[in-house]
Image 1 (cartoon, rainbow, N blue to C red):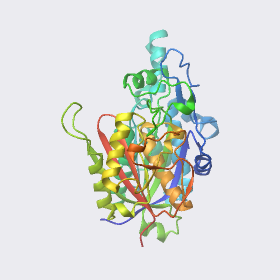
Image 2: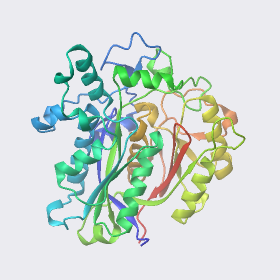
Image 3: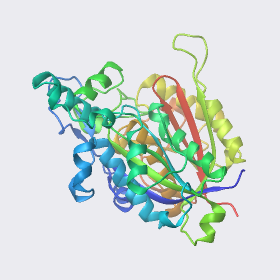
Image 4: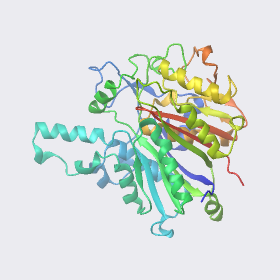
Length: 405
């Protein structure tokens, strides 16, 4: 089947806010959520900045029985799933038993939970380690906990492709809907802002060591010096356009096209395959480059990777031919949650006719030849291209836009 797959529900838990409306309002204000890490003491580390979800009290959103068995990341994901299903007004019990599934993306699993249990193991002994450690750390735990909480027994899974994961998970969910599954939850909610997770991220060599929050993450800027991690993301409810119309659901837009590629090994002669991913996504959507009204960039914040992405956009669209934005400059890079949040933001941008800004970038390099949007810009938008690159060579591209009738 090749039916159009539409988004009928969104759940957002991000540094820009909890809930779609709060996230969108903060995004239009250009609110940068990057600040000094508060979840643990970052003093011993060279990198001390991150973007945390503000004011998140899990007991206000989840039953008490779930708190001791879940990592912070999973609690965020459960809240996002609750929001998405409620936003979609989807009556799960009325659907076929195997009619709704879940596909999420993850980069690290429940690092914070695992860190705490390891501390108990070494300081108190194995009898003090929680039995929930057996699954709370696992990459697929978000999918499992969401499916259990809502009784979702349809096709499910997890994708582990770092920053590209949010698009890959949405694409897998789209594929299941096309194959006849009544509805799917897809996307990513991620984050490992704990001392153990911080060590792992430090070793990648990509984190900014800047101390000023507004100068730490500057993609496409002359001062680009690295990335800033964040936590959170977005989960979306997907249905076929026909099913959505039949039940009178509100539609945010459609997932029109997708592609994924993998770069050659580092040090080999092969170039990045991000361009091929973008071109294949356009082909899958049945559109030309001129039909894209805005690009949500991967925006690595590292000069070599920024240059490679700018070169890709120049080759696909021509110099300054399409507006480019990176609202993740407000949230940091959310690992597997970042790209699905970009998809949600792109659909909101199309709905409201506003391109959200790239914040803090004051010296965009002219030789990149980008029409970089640095303040909210009114525009008539029908389609957006979202790009994502995961550490290790993963590339993904997704075209989203208005539903086609």
